[in-house]
Image (tube, rainbow, N blue to C red):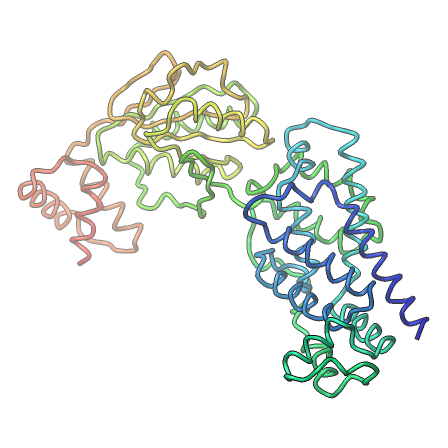
Length: 437
């Protein structure tokens, strides 16, 4: 029995040592604990209870570890929920190491600490579901007498006294320690969803699965973050800023028609030069409401997939814009900041030398404004009837619908007479919908 207890104690000590070694991936506790905080505390309690040979109380902690791993939201990729959680913690969850690498600020002390964290996480990764319950069974077999806390609990539940000293575990107690049906393993390695940085992230996942010493991947991990950014920037291309950066799903331009090719060319030329490392010239797109400004900008984003975008509403203050720019400055990617329905007050006190080299500032407005700031101003012309008819026909063709030009012309003329609307893209979409109904 002593050898069994020694084996359990050695395994528990190894686990406790690895848990206590974590520094970089372990953030200061907050009022609202994260899943990592819960996992960390529960895993430590599990190991501590094993070390004290208390399998009856270690078993609920083991079950709680499984619950945390299932509910934590880690990306399903490896086929093992513990590995999923550990790799999500290292690669996706932002920490001091990933932020420093993304900003290009190398810190040798941080490098050494991250190497130690990675080696400790490798030790923890070896605790699979079968090993966890085997350790519980070993502790129970080596110490068959229920511990004092267990005896008191059983006595209180049965209404009897505390006279169970020396009794062997009964069938119910043994059942309580039996391992549950396995749920940690759900398949083979596979990217089951899509992240923005998957071109490099997939290979890095595989490196962690193949590497015996995770600490050896510290330099490779640094280079990955320095090229691809950190945190949500690895997952998403588009963001919305309302005081905090929030990810947006992949966007499509939608009902784009080639009514403004020259204007799109001007925007595209400047954005492409920016992506190639030339000076980022702020640009403003002007046009009446419904003229297609936002649609044109979305089309530009579609054409330049290496450009990350941040949408900023018109109520954001200039101080918040400055804080946002500083956050973007500390990432390696190229960003397009887009302010739809521009409020000039949002840019108070901001001049071009203050803009990060990796941020292209763009905006849409009904009329030209702040032309000393926006070096490039592109104006969408008002539509004439012939252009309006052509836009409706192109929208129909994009939907796979073909109608005679005269039919479309009549619908356009009738719609103009009935609604007195302006001839713009929004109206063209409405006429297209009426023709298809």
